[in-house]
Amino acid sequence: MPILQENVSLKPFNTFGIDVNAHYFAEVTSEADLQEVFNNPIAKTQNLLILGGGSNMLFTKDFEGLVIKVSIPGISYQVDGNAVSVVAGGGVVWNDLVNYCVAEGFAGIENLSLIPGTVGASPIQNIGAYGVELKDVFTSCTAFEIETGQMKTFDYAACQFGYRDSVFKNELKGKYIITSVTFHLSKTATLQTHYGAITTELANRNITEPTIADISTVVADIRVSKLPDPKTIGNAGSFFKNPVISKEEFETLVQKFPDVVNYPAPNGKVKLAAGWLIEQCGFKGIVVGETGTWKNQALVLVNHGAASGQEVYNFSEQIINTVYAKFLVGLEREVNIL
Ligand code: EPU
Image (cartoon, rainbow, N blue to C red; front, side, top):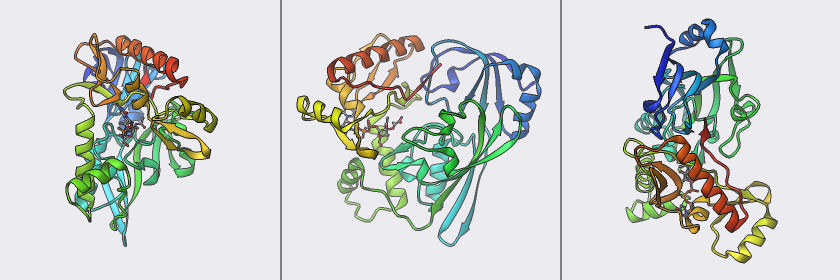
């Protein structure tokens, strides 16, 4: 079969389960495949979309261009004393990597259990959960430069990580395809258990000295209890980012809404729980046509089966406008809209 296919449905390739077509589609399992795709003159003339697990995308229309699904496999590691360097292919399913590391006794990513998506996509938005972010364990990544076909290595500083952010979402957006990521993990676990939900759940289970596997299990159970499984209900995790506001804005807000859920953020700023803001507007668990918010977590928008991307998008606009009218806080989407 030629590597470039035409008119391929993207429904199996996005966790929202939106049924749109890609004009051209190629699944790549190696750097050589990438070279082959870009040796084809068609590829050079197309709009490109690089897809990992499709877990952070909302398609609102057919994609009139070339979709490249990265399926580069492989996990390997090197041990040096207690330090472990793990290299994983860009197409490895993130949670498969977590399970592999937990089984080997390598600590560092157990708090990131059950996050959907692939290894190659993980640095792009610096995935994070339960007190750990990808940047905490990131060493470097290799990437294919689309314009030149050259491979390049990005170290920690070059990635310019921020909250759900990196250089790959900014200056280098659309310029590179991440083919592998190297992580620094450890055989001696310094476990991150300070996040409220983890502390509570460990206490409920009478676990006083948690292992790496305990943390992974607890995090996975918390996620399952709060977040819908994309295999049964289409969704892309948190649809919005938690907004970060200035201290002054926060002081005005807290006068009017003393219960506003908030966390300290860098540079004296304050991070708000978007899920709380949305819930306060009466949106938690509501069903609007084929879309709505999840019953246990208002920050997650869902597809009840036959939602179009446009329908979900319109609902997200309604949420943004209502939250702004009530709190004067602007929500930004975390999910990419296409
Ligand atoms: N809350 C509500 N109502 C809701 C949801 C949340 O009041 O419907 C309030 C509660 O006070 C809760 C607080 O918000 O204690 C925080 O909720 P949660 O612990 O579920 O975390 P989050 O801030 O809503 C973030 C990440 C998640 C990540 C969790 C756990 C973002 C945008 N989301 O959600 O990441 O799993 O923390 O660390 O930062 C994702 O990015 O797709 C994602 C799921």
